[in-house]
Picture: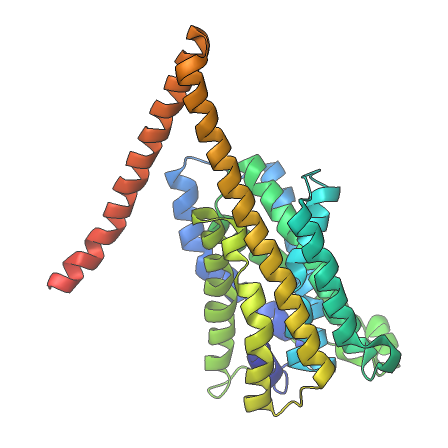
Length: 350
């Protein structure tokens, strides 16, 4: 993603590029979101609109704009590595906002990942503090978005694609309003006076889209933004957060290599060391969450077995109902998997 954003940045204003890719991504996912809403008999009420406006503000307007600027003002490889630490901040926000328990593996992961970030930033020899700070703020705010979107899902029962689609659309509309302010003469003149803020003056909406750039914009909007984000949330729904977050410790290794090959960005020794430390921190969190999930499952099964043999009659009735519900859920999941596999099998036969 960062490589394409860096390449596209030469043809588009960074804020404009952010607006276009999330608008296209949101509209691409909209039919799937509407289908999910109708299928589950849900409605988008005033509270849901407010929730989407909030997640759009955090994700698109703040986090992804900061990330786009980080790629523009710094190295794509560094921006990718720092942004990949966002699950660490999501853990902290889940503890502070949702009051979820911060397990020992997660706490160790947070400490290790922060050490890795410090090694990469190398505060004693900062050569590009602006790009580094922007990437870090982007990671922090995206971690906040992860918690906000989870809260919306729990409250309104929307699936990942629905939340992603409407978050992108609302965020794009909010960004469009901000872009409109940059066309006000007084504001545009003030922004032009400072080289750092000059890119925020007279931000175009659709300028630069032509036969040479349309494929790049569609790839960023549909492939990277729409499909990329949606598959991440689908992975969380069908497995768990730990499994879905695998992408965030594969990315720190892959992105610098791609940036080196395509953009010829030099990767310093401290960056490689920091990447290795962050990957270790992510692995600790992943393995720890898997171990906790397995342990909880075993404890639950041991409890049911104990109640079945030693509990009171009322306890045994409750255990029997739980076991029946669990078997029914397993049969439903098997039937659903069979339904998904039938088209593939039919296609292979044809």
